[in-house]
Amino acid sequence: MARIFRSIVFSVAATVACAAEPADPPAVLEPMLTNAETESFFSGEAVVRLSRGVVSLGESFDLECEVHCKGASGYIHNGMLAEHLKLPAQITITSTDGKVRRELLVASDSPPIGMEPSAWLRLWQGHTVGREFTIRIENAAVARSNGSSPVRSVNLGPGEYYIQAVYNHWLIALPVSSPTGPAERGQPLVLPWLSEAQMSRPLLISKPVKLRVVASHSDLTNVNMRTARPSHNSLHVELRPARTRAKYDRKTEVEVRMANRGDKTINVFNPQLIPIVEQRAVTLALLTTDGKEISDLLARVDGSWASAAKWNWVKMPPGGTVSSKAAFWAGATNSQFAASFPPGSYLLELTVNSPALSGAPIAVSDSRDKDGSADLRHPSWPEWLRSFPGEVICRSNRVELEILPRTGD
Image 1 (cartoon, helix red, strand yellow):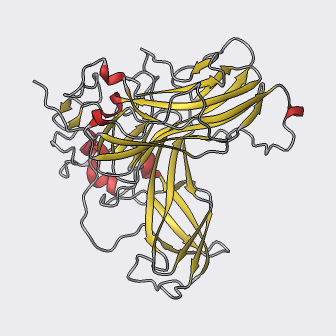
Image 2 (tube, helix red, strand yellow; image 1 turned 90 degrees about the horizontal axis):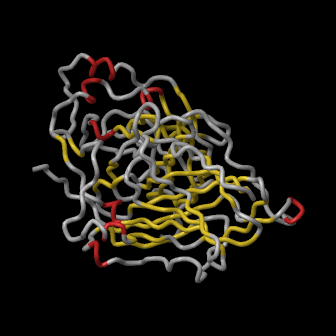
Image 3 (tube, rainbow, N blue to C red; image 1 turned 90 degrees about the vertical axis):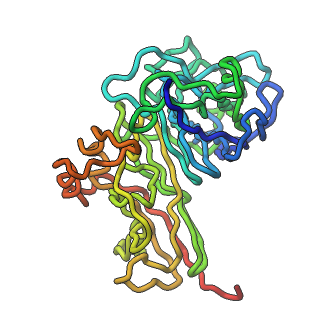
């Protein structure tokens, strides 16, 4: 009998963060706030974001659909919504009168060409996983895209619509285990307290987001126009928000978001930025306003460490996203060799080095350890260690950090 891993389960909330207007129309489902079926100790929420709330026919907008982990830890199934795997969600576009309904995700029996995306992803509190899409509005027969592509064409006429994500219980299904962790292949297992039919019931439901489609540019008066997200090669990193304020010597954080903007699956080392992993292929640089580097805020000088293991590599499909929170103390450098920095204005920038995309060494990929830990005796292990720090392969946007003096607290 197959050994089974304990799966995380959700006490759910639904939120929306977008440029569009949230609404609560009868044409869509009510946001789901709790679900007793999960018998949950885990909290999470579904998030939908749009880059634009108004588009004209023939134009595109960007859509992000993600699940945010608010507590506990564990594995989720197909969080990046690869359509050749069992889908744990559907994204719907519904007209306000309920007569038009479109589904963005289409189940496929054909895996993508090349490397298959990760079926299971381990999340901790503060992690977010999902997929981003570029949606082109057409007033004609739907031109469906290949399921591995995040670029979609949708048949919609002028009018108002609502976009909503509905996740089902397959998101927290049980994985069949292998000797070294969750098996990448094979169907997820039904939760013990549910039937297979009940697994398709809603688990998380986001709030609906309004989208208005107009016939032409002339109908876009006084609308903030944004072009569709530009294409990027492979890994794209972003810091959010654009500006952060924190009091001196207080803990603060920024969101680090990684996305696959290429057309093939990529294998990324530790995109969740799990701090206990000893090897690190990214740097969160604290910069002066003229761009001079002061310190790496992700550097650690004490605490427990663990070498990279098999589950630290995540195969991200085209459009796949993984986000985490990078926490630091405002004014501290995380280095015993550098002085703290005073209140004032600074910049933050994330850089990613080549080991992030070089793939797991054989010492890890072929490891038979039950926890997927590296075989430190294999010659590929020291060879991989020598590849650090490597060359910078991409940089994030620069965001502002303002550190305020501590007064009266």
